Amino acid sequence: MISRTLTLTAVAASCLLGCATDDLDTTNRGGEAVAIVPIELRPELDREGRPIPGTLDIDTSEGRLDVTSLMPERPREFRSWDELNEWLVAQLNAEIIEGEDGVRRAQLSIIASPAVRYDAQRDELVDVDDVAEAVVGGTFGYVLVDGALVCTSRTAACAREQSIAPEASGLRHHLPNARRMAMNGFEIEGATWITHMFFYHNVGSETRQVQGGFQVFTSPCGFFQWCTTTTGTNSLATSLIAFRQGGSIFNFQGSAAKSNVRSIRIDKIEWGPPSWGSQGPGLPPSGIIASTTGVCARHHGGTTNAVVDFQTSDGVHPAGGC
Image (cartoon, rainbow, N blue to C red):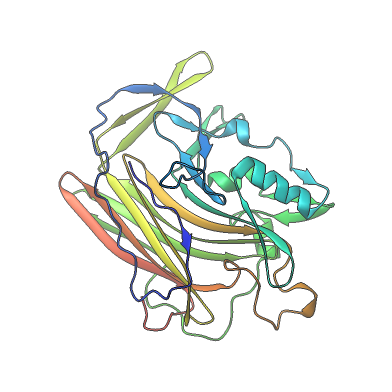
């Protein structure tokens, strides 16, 4: 199993990242039941094995799927942005970046597969697609900072109220931001997104298996215990290149690949006060994630008898296209 961290660079990129899937463990997991236990939140490691600040690799292997214990029972409350930043550093290994406007914001690069949580009303485990959003905002999708509601989820009800309207000018991408493709009974779905809210920014891509390949079955297996049984095999990969200012300037890139998972996604996230500060929205936003206006992504999936590969994109069309 390998993964690649999202990295920032000042060097321009002329083509989309390739999705490397070599050396992946694609052993057929033939029907062995494994108890579902809490997931592991761990940082990416450098070549010397040292933790990399601002990174998170969410490990869902060997039954590490349950995020319930990490989710808040009520909205989290913080007395200030500094307190929220400290919590994000301690709990998620976020990195604090000071922008050109002098404001400190938390940033995080994430590689993750889907997890599950216990739903008491339904008395069953339900899927959690975005683990980071679940840990920070729970089922509510927001936190309170100095008494103010701060939306922390792309899909929560508060997202519409706190979203920043996209730029009216500029060419949209010619590629869709979500697409499916199948071959020999193996099908994957790819999605790409750019989310800009007042306090939360998220740029990412995901490759998800739809059918064939690797299968997961969840069922009760004891007193207050759940187990997962997996069969089959796959390899999934996703990568992206992000741009800003109408796609004329390269912003950052990232890629990730894993085997025997239902999906693989990469997110680049920023939490913090509004990016334009007190000088108004006429100025360019501060922060590399907040300033992203376009993204090109590639999605790759393979199994024993099929390989699928395609691209998606979102935002304003970069120079030269995807």
